[in-house]
Length: 182
Image (cartoon, rainbow, N blue to C red; front, side, top):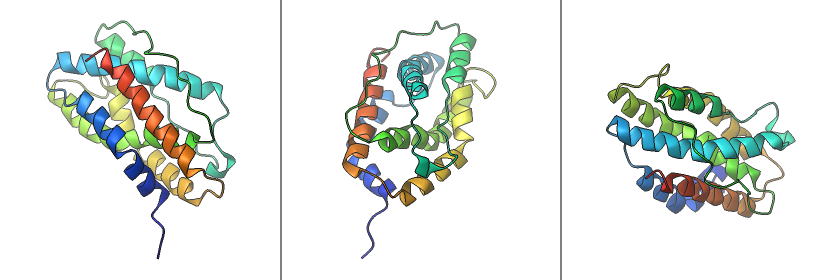
């Protein structure tokens, strides 16, 4: 009997946290709802990306793959909509253990949901060049997700419990970042 893929296990172990975040964000049907979403995204991604850039995060087994950073696009989107960059929800400080793969799973996996968000943002007049750069860039970058998930499956050194803990922590951190704007 084959073991389930690491991706499938992480998806199952984070399903409740992922659903809670999706429920909180909901759909943005107008510009005001999108503005709240964008502030929450900035409060989530900017401190997390800053933390990640200060690490030497990528395990050697992931090869030349590197995480994608969308902070500059988020800042440009905020500027397009005349929104001042918000304060961070709180500094990002992950749990103990070697679970960085779980954090990267959440960040890179967000490219899948970005495809739906890109359609929603177009419906309210935003685009890849105005107000929704970060979404369109994520939606157009599925190759990074595919490369990451393929290499994650082939890693020899992998801590499934720590990865799950970090992934769930990342979803909780995102929910905290979005709570204030919503």
